[in-house]
Length: 468
Image 1 (tube, helix red, strand yellow):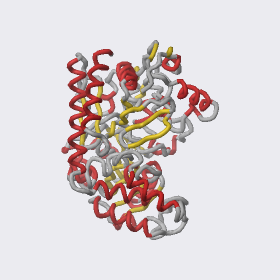
Image 2: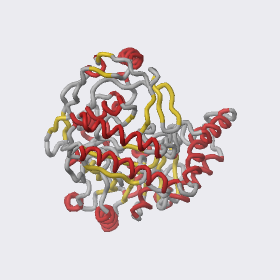
Image 3: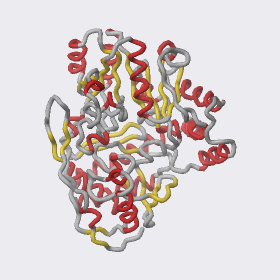
Image 4: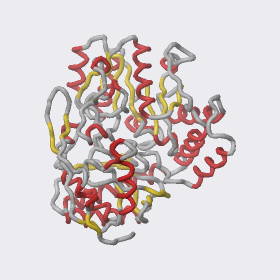
């Protein structure tokens, strides 16, 4: 890693006080102001130059908001290449990466087997706009592994999967209202931008300008891990709720695990009210278990959405579930949804190879072992340095908060010290560790991460925890 000293105009730029709005009901705000450092030993001159140019070309200089580093201070690191568990920036710095392209790189970046499959497919064509056998192969893998899926439709993103499943729930039940949870993020479709997590929370935006009031009028919200709040919503909207959608493990408000009682209670409430239950497994799918979160918790939803891992690093999404529900989708049924690049052969071959690798013996056991070691080391380092800190992991997904905890919902997550997280994030960058630039994003491990990578990360965490 290059270590030439530079004054950090980089860190001082774009750092402003912001607030996280917890929605229309509470009107509560919490400061997540990032703290600027005065200098850095990390050479990011070329990253600065490229980002400065990007500011004139792209809104905010990025193509997805959380990449802009607004909640941690400074400007983003510009990547040049990735391999295995590592990413390399344009200034020649190497980092151990715990974002993994925000989840898809579960077998490691630029995996040789996945790359070989992609290279072979490129010679055959990158997009057909017509059926191909690869779609059948991928569908069989999903149906075989995901307990609730009897039929599946491939799309191009998690957002597209979620907006499509919302339309499907309404079409099947002939009801309009849908229940989501505060802090859960299901993509940027109008109906879901109500008390959302992820980048919305990171930037302090409760909803979004441009979303018509009519688009969110039928979106109801409740508190995650709180069945009483769910029952109250159902009582006030008897016979009107088409579906309930949630992240079975929250990754878009930071890492928040559900209780078994909460998930089972949701299943029971939905069954009693003829309401469909959808697990949004865009993040958890094939990451926390071979059969996704529904297998891990042994709870059967009616529908699910998938993404990230099933594309092996290429743009992809999917929704699936019970056959009688999925047969509502055109052309089998009247609910229309289409996509030019849906099921494109590159995404299919990358996903097929990724799921094949994950299906080999011992893969999930390894992911669980290294992730537990990693988060335990980070938490121990924080407590040894005198910080209030709590967190956890499930298989290859982890996270923590700078607060005593426990954190069971988004409102409790906002008690985490955002300024301290900003200092932590920058300190870990200095140590060659690349983490999500927001306290409201989960972290990810991969099969490519080694015990040595985890050891290096824990040692770096000890040093940084003492400094902040």
